[in-house]
Structures are given as C-alpha cells and as structure tokens.
Image 1 (cartoon, rainbow, N blue to C red):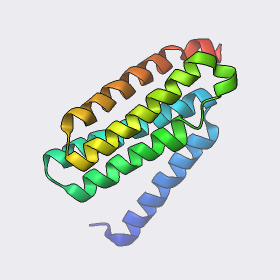
Image 2: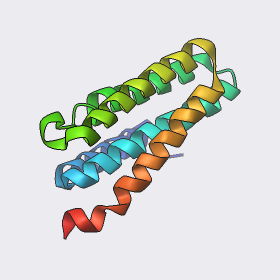
Image 3: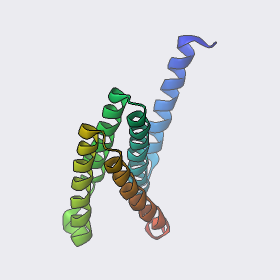
Image 4: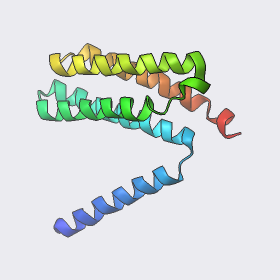
Length: 134
C-alpha cells in the first residue's frame, strides 16, 4: 500500500531510534539492551529451529553468540570485578559453547538452557537498577 519508499523510511527511522537509544543509555541500560538483544535472537532461533528454517536459526544463533562474546563478555572488568567478573566470563564462554552445540546439532535443550541463563542474568541485572542509578 505504501510502497518501497515508505518501507525504507520506516526502516531508517527504526535504525535512528535504536541508535538514539544506545547513545543516550546509561552503561547499566546498555547491558540490559545486550541481554534483550541476545534473548530476542535466541527466541527467533528457537522458532526457526522448530520450523526447520536452518538459515534463520544459524543467523540468529550467530547474532546471539556475537552479543554474548563481543558485547557482554568484553564489557566485564576482570580486575575491578573480581571473582564475580571471572565467573561471568566463564559463564559467557560456556553459553557460547552451548550455542555452538545447539546450532550444529539442532539441540533445542541447549538453546533453552542458554535462554534460561540469560533470562536469570537479565532479571538480576534489572533488579539492581535502583542501586546503580541512585
């Protein structure tokens, strides 16, 4: 109905909106956004896996691995964070390994395991928002 130009404008608006959100977000909010992005990618991968849509599954799992390893993991300060940061570092490595396994073997249980871990971490991170901002 609106044509390609409308779709292009809508996509551009969405990109600008996401960029603005990232630029104005606090470091705490950025981590929440990374958790949310990884969870969306994994839920997309789960639906794709169930529907035998291999390309979408692979792309979505790869995106989640990228977020975990190049977003969440690299944001850790291992010196200042001590044992907690070291444990999160190891957990993120474990998640990436499980996601590779899930992708290679179409293993829904491994995918669900990582979704559960990320949901728990996201919930805990969101719960400390008042302590961080206040």
